[in-house]
Image (tube, rainbow, N blue to C red):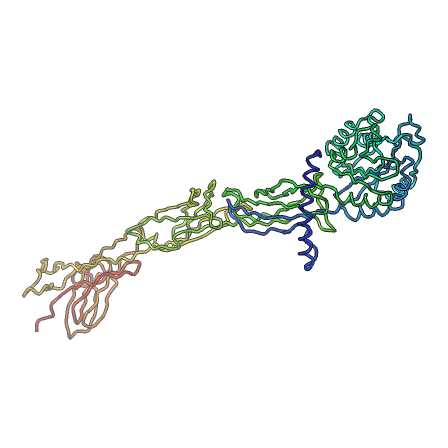
Length: 594
């Protein structure tokens, strides 16, 4: 991104406020050690679709921007002897301090300029003594070779030098913070070697594919010279040094004495603007945004952002844990490092998925209601997952397997499933209904499930009937209620009948005859069985086969199946496959005459 004057003004405003804030942060952190590079360093949340959270994020920046390419550019005319000597004495310390205050490997270069040849200069108009390198000894040797001589008039050839450094005299690295540390005591000819101040400024800002070169101008106080912002007795416009520094995002350090040059260089390098850019890495489907999207502060000061993490309103994202990072980089893409710690924030967001089937259990009287409906509610925390729909697969196992369906949740996160079973004893029992939906982290597997049960029952008893039938000897049907209107079958011949609500697939009804006198129970008999019942209070209860359908062909009457003797009346009950017992029915007969 190209640096403009507005950036410098923004940088100064932010720096003044951030200095106070950072001092307070440092004071608060003394008791607990230095603050984290990213504070808070991690986010660990449980969130549902449509949720968002806002986090204030503070990012500490290094003292010097990452990966700096620094060119030391000196005026080496005669008046600069003491200043050059100061730099030569301290160049190793300057480079060591820069290396300690930044990340990556800093590169350094050394270049010099003097005066236009037509004014009697004895040295080079411009010269690169050492190109950009990480060999600090080579740079130190090049600086040690500087000597102050010649000069002619007051203005020098810095505009040409700056232009040359911006247009190929040295090769800057990609993704580097490129800086020219320029020190001198006089303004420059405009133009210089055909290059004007405008030419130099435009070239500096256009360098490095538009990323530009920051110029730090250190104005040296020497006798008889008006400084980098001077007018040279009115021969050049004033304010040249400040304009160039401001236009490139740098600054001018005014009024440095020759023995303060090294301190001024180091202080200026530790007061560079640095742009912090948050970049979310691998956070999909989360939407991670920052306000502001980037922030320029003084290197060494904190940058503060409002971070918003949003889970999109999409049902398909539920059922996963998202782990990602936010890298805080400089404007060239370098991850910031302070000390040994990278400016990286960890984000962990769990997006849960749940399914709940209703009702948990239900009992149906099969003969009255053979249909069942299950409702599935799919959600994430308190958010119904109707956002785009969530597929639910239903399956029935148990007594009635094979039913199932796949359906999609509605806007309320609800999916329904219904099935009907045959009205048959074969359907009696318990079904398990399972509803499953798929997680975002395993979209092909329906493994988030819930299950409920359905009981198909028969609790309705059969209806028994003890019907008087004809006396096979006389082929006459006994009359009722009999003598004296007693409501009795005088001959004791009955047919045992019963009906039930369930028939299909059911076992035959079992009929039982109980002697009310002795409590003896006879049976089971099939529906339609014909009996002769004899009541004799003095008899021993017994049953004997007759010539009917009892299978043995014995007995005198082929129309009667069994003869039963009891001490009291007969009571008939019927029992169905489910064990339901009918209401008792009396099969009344009179006792024998006395």
